[in-house]
Length: 378
Image 1 (cartoon, helix red, strand yellow):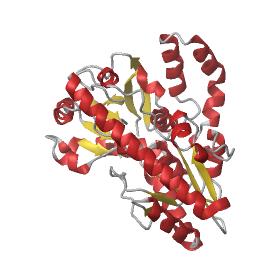
Image 2 (cartoon, rainbow, N blue to C red):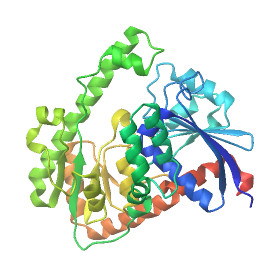
Image 3 (tube, rainbow, N blue to C red):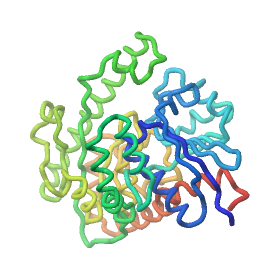
Image 4 (cartoon, helix red, strand yellow):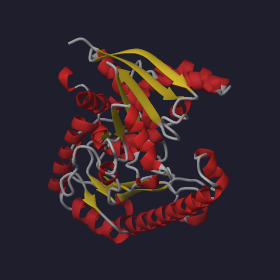
């Protein structure tokens, strides 16, 4: 089969979002396998700041006369989002959305174009364009030291962040619990700050959005503090994790800040994911399915999570892929149930690694979208 020739368009600000690296990694693998041929990567500071893709993290592919948009923004924060999405769907062929809301999709004029984009995580792959884009962006921002560092370390960065290094499907005879999380900082949020990100808002709208966002972050922080505290008290040495160190953690729960080398560095955390831990997670900002979910599935770990706000692609099932909690007290009961049932943990690990290879793995994730857009090619 002749490769699908594609052009990739994106905004400079995408270079600051690690999860977007999974799109470039997936494309590189597909290119190596002869499924696609990338004709050109176009990065522009003006792209996605126009009326076509306002205020969103978008990667656009054009191929065979079709336009595919990949939106990895957290949720649906635009005040005018119904019309925003309808306008976009008028001019493109498919819109693949992370933080996919099926109820919202039903309200759209061209809902068949609006598709679920599987979860991602920060990663790379040898030869990926993502590092080249970060160098170009650093130069455009006159961050020459950063550009020089990435240029010198590009191969090493790609090797260290190769998604295959995270993959694991190993079983253990006994398990501990892992919950490493952060508290969100919100003291800097003002209406003016919101208007910089969403310039179409009035000042009153920006104030309302700011108040809602602050309350959301406060509630998220409160739930995370209670969850860490109850797990640490109940499980002692069988619990690994706590809060990462930042200003909010030092103000609100300094006793829960962890310096455990198994989690405080990214490499330590990723190595721990492949060990005998049941992973506990909570939804990200705006309810998004954060990168740590993708990492958990890549590592083939059992999962305990609060309710999904958005629908993960592929139909995850409670009891088979994860246990769900709605309060810190329910975290305790879920953790107790799993830690004492190794057979169930093993089944969940197998189910989750299978799910990763069918939906989340960077090359498969991109391939699944191409199968939707070009069914006659596959």
